[in-house]
Amino acid sequence: QSALTQPPSASGSRGQSVTMTCTGTSSDVGGYNYVSWYQQHPGKAPKLMVYEVTKRPSGVPDRFSGSKSGNTASLTVSGLQAEDEADYYCSSYAGSNTVLFGGGTKLTV
Amino acid sequence: EVQLVESGGGLIQPGGSLRLSCAASALTVSSNHMTWVRQAPGKGLEWVSVIYKGGNTQYADSAQGRFSISRDASKNTLYLQMNSLRAQDTAVYYCARGFYSMDVWGQGTTVTVSS
Image 1 (cartoon, rainbow over the protein chains, first blue to last red):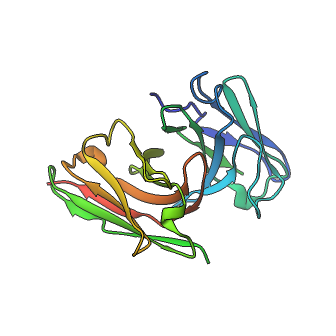
Image 2 (cartoon, rainbow over the protein chains, first blue to last red):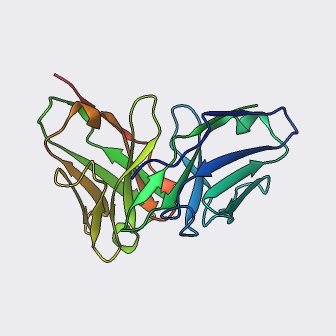
């Protein structure tokens, strides 16, 4: 199984919105509503930002929103803030009790 | 506060073995699906293994046959036994709560496989 495909970089100015994509196949992203997004600052552990495609854990700002269309999932960050600058990883259940991660997108604000 | 603390990482020669531990606080390991994820230097996240709350286990192809995940309810601790280590296993290893999504992560422990 190959990793999910994420663009290596994305950028936006403070206050703007940016959307990051995560492309898989019908065997993972397209086949299940178990897409998650994680934020990782340098030297830190990942933090769950979105789960089950659209749900936000308690404490995650509503500026972060997830969606999915076909085999591609997306994470939109609106009202960009300086602290949003980080690496973002998507993951998806891939069947057969396995999980795939994307290669990550470095967001620059 | 819910917390996971990994330990056991270090420098190990190729072919060697290492056991990682993940001690949990305010979280019952045996009542949750628990996952190991690793991150090679400068690379992305890679799912390694899961132990379901029912006790079943699953491994990534890269870990199958070499790694073994387990837990000790009395110590509320998760383990990852790693054998036949290769240079490609060099990474920060994180334990996390969950499987489909992972909502609590440890700080990671570094494993370096090198002669």
